[in-house]
Amino acid sequence: MSQELQLDELYRDLILDHYKNPRHREKVGAPDVTAEGFNPVCGDEIEMELNFDGERLAAIGVRGRGCSISQASASMMSDLVEGKTVSEIRVLTDEFQHMMKEPDAPAPAALGDLEALQGVAKFAVRVKCATLAWHTLNEGIDQHERGDGSVRIEEL
Amino acid sequence: MSYNVDEIRKDFPILERRIRGKQLVYLDNAATTQKPRQVINALVHYYEHYNANIHRGLHTLAEEATAAYEASRVKAGEFVNAAYPEQEIVFTRNTTESINLVANAWGRKFLQPGDEIVFSAMEHHSNLVPWQLIALATGAKLRFIEIDDTGHLIWDDVVAKIGERTKVVAITQMSNVLGTINPVKEIAALAHKFGAIVVVDGAQSVPHMPVDVRDLDCDFLAYSSHKMLGPTGVGVLYGKRDLLHAMDPFLGGGEMIKRVTYEASTYADLPHKYEAGTPNIADVIAFGSAIDFLEGLGMDAVREHEIAITQYAIDRLSQTDGVVVYGPKDAVEKGGAVTFNYRDLHPHDLSQVLDQEAIAIRAGHHCAQPLMRRLDTVATARASFYLYNRNDEVDALIDGIKASDRIFGDVARVAAR
Image (cartoon, rainbow over all chains, first blue to last red; front, top):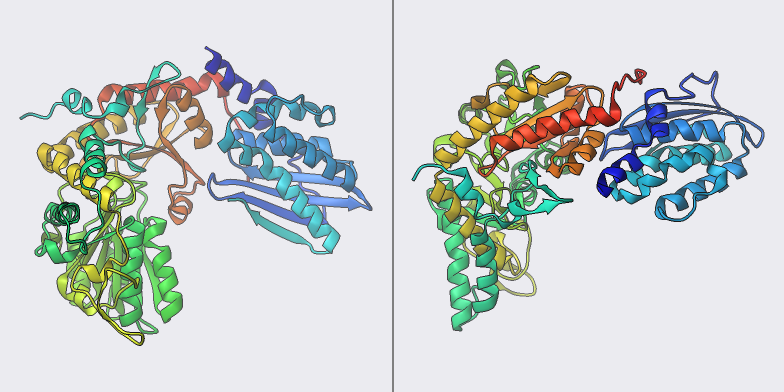
C-alpha cells in the first residue's frame, strides 16, 4: 500500500496537469537564443526559445516531447523563471538540483509549485528527466552571455 | 519429455521473487535472461573446487579448469553446428566485442577506400557503430538496406545495395526491437556471389531458435551467453576457419602468442590467437551449463513455445484499445520481442507504472536510434519472452497497461510539433 502511495507521490496531480496542458508553448518572436536539450537514453527532447531584456529573461517558449516528468518539469519551470533575472534563475537552478538530491528535506519556498516534483528524487532514474529543462535553460543563458545564438546539449 | 513451463520455472530461483508483495513478471529477456540454478551452481562449483588459470599451469586445478573451459568452447560451437568447434569459436566479453573483433581484425586488413559495408535499417548500435568506425579508418563506405512498414527488409533493396563493391554485409538474424527474423541464408548467398563476407548478429536469434552456421553459410556469427541463460561477460564469435587464419589479431598480449622477441611475435594457433590475456574462465564454464540446459529442452521446443506465447501477446496487445504494436504480427516470422506503445503515454511512464505491479519490461530506444526514427517515434515499450514465460504473465502485462489509465486517464496532449 505504501508503494502505491509512492507512485502517486511521483505522479502528482499538478505534474499531470502540466503534462497534459503544458504552458509557454507559444513561439517567442525573434528569440535571442534557442537551446535544445536531448536525453538520448529516454528520447526526451526539449526546445527552448529565450528573449532577454538586459539581465532579465523577458520571454521563454518551450516545446518538446518525452515522458510526463520531463515535459511537466519544463512547463512548470517556464512559469517560474519568466521575468526573473539571470542571477535569480541561477539560484533557483541550484535549489532545484538540491531538491532532486534530497527528497526528504523541506522544498525551498522559492520553487513554489515545483515542489510537486520533489517525489521524483525518490526514483533515481527519473531525476534526469526532471533536470533536462533546467540544464537546457542554463546552457541557453550561458550561450547568451557568450554572445552565441544557439546551443544543443545531450544528457547521458 | 514434453515441454512443461511450470517444471522449467522451478529451476529459476529468481522467478520466485516478490517485489513489494507482488510476484515478479520478468518480460525483459531480450535485454538479459534469468539464470537457472544449474548455471549458478556451475559457477560456485568452479570457484570452490578447481579455480585456476588455464592453458599454462601444469597442476591438477589448471588441467581441470582448462578442460572445462575448452569443453564450453566445443559446446558453443556445436550449438550452432560449427564444422571445427575447437578452432572456430572465440570467446569475447559480449556480442559487441565479437563484432568489433571482426570489424577491426578483418576490416583493417582487407577493406580499401571505396569498398562498401552494407547493413540493415534495423541493426542494433553494436552492429552499426563498429562499422562506422572502421569505415572512417579505412575509407570504406556505408550503405543500409531499408525496411518496409511491417518491419521486414525490402528484398528489392537488398538486391540493390549488395553488389560488386560490397565487401561486408553485416546483418542481424533477429531484430531486438521488431523481432523480425531476416533471411540471412538468402542474403549470404547473394553476398557471396560478389565475394563479400557476411557477419551475422545472432544476439537475439541464437538464444531463441535453432541456428546452423553451415546451413546459413555465414562467415561470422556473434552471440552472447547472458541472453541465453548464461552469465554476463561472455560473448561468442564464430568465424570460418580460413577467415580466422587470414586475419591478424585484434588484441595483443599473453595467451595469444607463440614466440615473442622485443621486435616481433608469432601468434598462437586458432582460436587462441584471438584470446589475449586471461579470459573469463568461470563464466565461460558456467555458460557450458546454460548450453546443456538449452540442449536438454531442445531448441525446436523452445522456439515452438515462444511462437505460442508471442502470438498470444501480439493478439492480446492488438486487441487492447490504444495499443500500437510495431513489427510483424505473425509470430512465426519473428522472435519473442514485442514492441509497442500505449496511447500517447511515454514508455518510461508506462514502464514506471508496470514496475509498481512487479512487471519488468524495457522502455526506450533499445540501442536502435535510427530504427526509432524510421518508426517515427522516440521510444517504445518492449516486452520480450523466453522459455519460462507463461500466458498468465501476458495477462498481467495487459492488466498493468490498463492500470496506467488510473493515473494518466485521458492523456490528450498538445501535439509537440
